[in-house]
Length: 215
Image 1 (cartoon, rainbow, N blue to C red):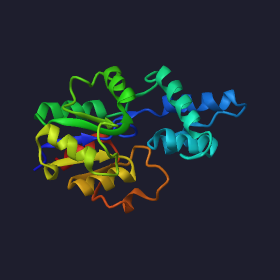
Image 2: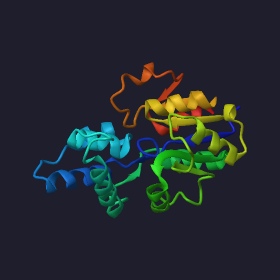
Image 3: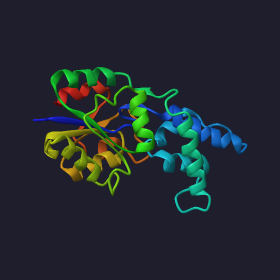
């Protein structure tokens, strides 16, 4: 019996790609490059600064300019955190249903607290979420199970009584390692790591409210 629901943030609960993309394209334009279309940005948005800088400038952690570029990207993003970001269609109704059923729900994200906390406030979810585990709150980030186990402990719900909805392969990997049931948000960003049907989750949904069918 499912006693709690946990969500990824970017690409699952909220469509953050427009504001992340603005930060990346601002960097590109200041360097004389053209803006990238949102369709390309969405694919890498769940991977955060690492994925987007790789997309926009073909650089990766350890490269000479990576740390400076990452700092600039995050500063630009902080200036425009929730201008176009919104909940995915159907998410608000899903959360209302969970609240009506008395099922606690929370957020587990690799997004640093610097951004996740104010973003949750902007989305008016801070007082509703039973927990928020952000990047940096635990020693390890997803796909390690520690963030999910930290959330289940905060909710006082056993991992095998939780489900985790995410849109990235590492969400499924973290769920399985934590002993939780993963559900894939096929409406999310999904990344470039093969078909989500091959990630190892039994359940995939195309609309947020389909999750109610698994509770």
